[in-house]
Image (cartoon, rainbow, N blue to C red):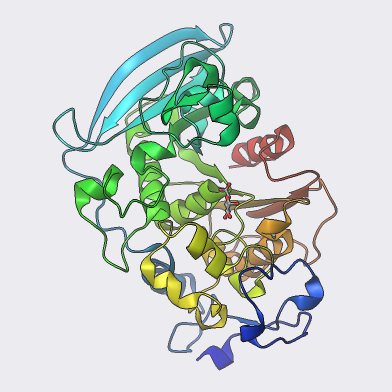
Length: 423
Ligand code: GCU
C-alpha cells in the first residue's frame, strides 16, 4: 500500500544504506536520501480517508502503529489508587502577582510508591472560567525552574552533568540548594503569569529516572517490566503529563479547555506523544524535539534512529530497533505524529543552530501534517516554504525557526503565549 503513499521530491543523491554508519551524521542536504512518506490520509489497506469520521478511525490506526513500532503501548490509564496530596500553597509568590502550589500525585495507596510532584504557578487574579495553563515537563526538578526558596527541592534521583557536579548542584545524584533556578531561563514564570497564564510543571525523573536500568524503577516498577512493544521512558513521561492533567482537572481556577502540553528536546518528543494520545490537551508544543519527535525519520539528517536507539535504549519500545538504518520500513513517520494533534493547535519550534534535531525535517513534518487539519476544516501552516528566521507562521499548525541554539528562550515563550491565547 506504500506505493499509494505521498510522493515527495527531495534531493535524490542515493547512497546504499550500508554506506551509512553511526558516525556518518548527515549535515548536508545533498546527502539526504530520497524517500516516500506514508500518507496520513490513507488507511493501511490503501483506501482513502475522506471525512472527519474516517479520520477518527485512521487516527486510531496511527496511534496503534506509533505504539507498536515507536514508543510502545501504554499499559495503564489512570490508576484507581491515584490520589492528590496538596503539600504547599503560597499566596503572593513572585512579588505578589502569583500563587504557588505544590501537589504530590501518588500512584499507589501507600506513601512509599512512586509519585509525581506537581508545581503550579498561576496569576493571583484568576478570571471566571480559569486561566490557560501549560503542563511542562522539566529536566532538573521543579526547583530548577526558578531560584525562589519557596519551591521544594526534588527528592528524586537526578542526572548529573559534569558541570552540575563540579559546581555542587548535584551530589550523589541528589539536587542541592545550589541547583535552584538552574533552568530558569527556560521557564519565564513572570512572563507567563503577566500574560495571564499558569505553568504546571513536574520533573520527568519522578516518573522514570532517565537512564537505562532495565525498567527496575519509576512507574515501570509499579506496573511491571514492559514487553518489547510496551512503553519505554518517553511513553512513561507522556503518561505522567496526562496524570498531571488529571490533577489540574480538579482545580476550578484552571481553564480545562486551554491546557497545553509542552516540552523541550527529549521532552518535546514526549509532549508530542502525550498530546497525540490525550485529546484533553488543547495544544501541543514541540520545542526542538528532533529525532523521534517532530523531525522526519526518513530524512536521516542529524540524529537518526540507530543513533538514538543506541545512545538512549530506554526511550522507545524495543520494536523501534528494527528500524535502525532501516527508516524506510517504518510504517509511520513523524508528520503523522504531528497530525495526531489535529484539530487541536500544534506548535513545532526549531532553532537554526540545532542541526542535530534537523530543523528542516521538523518543518516538513508540520507541513505534511496539514492535510489532516484541512480535512477537519482547520488551517495548517499557510506556506510550503521554510520561513525566515524568527518568523512564526501558521494557524492551527504553527512553526518557527528561531536564531540560536538548542534551547528554550523568551522568543519561544512569546509565541507559545500568543498561541495559547488564540484558543
Ligand atoms: C540528545 C539526544 C536528543 C535529545 C537531546 C535532549 O542530544 O540525542 O535526541 O533531544 O539529547 O533531550 O536534550
